[in-house]
Image (cartoon, rainbow, N blue to C red; front, side, top):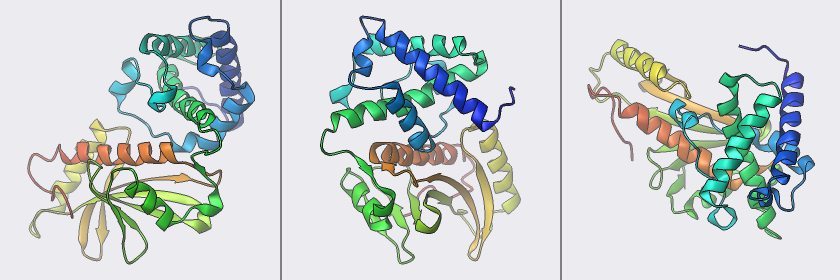
Length: 268
């Protein structure tokens, strides 16, 4: 594993993006991928919104990835495959190790896809300013995207239908953080906590892209996961929804490993 300071990593990534941009523009079949965009915009958006990109299951990095931009700005699948391969080759030229390249390419391209989508938004950019963000805004957004969400008494947003597993979303203005919280309760008051801890360890060994734990609460222990990200630079709403859906998918994948029915599968 290569040890780099954050500044060194950022410099190397920016260099890779610059090389990638130049390489794509030199290729007739894919140059339109960056139509109307500059390297400055791509680098700026990467730093602004990279925290909204969640780690993926290991298998995701081994295959050709799917486009995440809205259908209206997607390019042909063979062209996108060429873009992805080009970026991987460029990152190798920029000095990244083979073990780093697939994951890095996927994560940076996801932000680039958002930048391309924002270019197409014209006068209606789908990015909230940080001062706008509150629980009600997030709740209304989820409900406007064919999902169900409701505000709880404590202000948290409980997200249900439209996600693979129910979870809570919490907006913390003081620290400009959005936190996604998943919980599963023991199926019986007689369920041994040690068995759930053993199950949790098995989940973490298999689902390495998401951290799970067993937590004690006033009402007893729960199987728990959380993911937090900063919105101090604003909220790209497409990335927010994708992040929320992936978090729910991660939790469902964990629950599906519970063959001994230690936990309640769903909560309403």
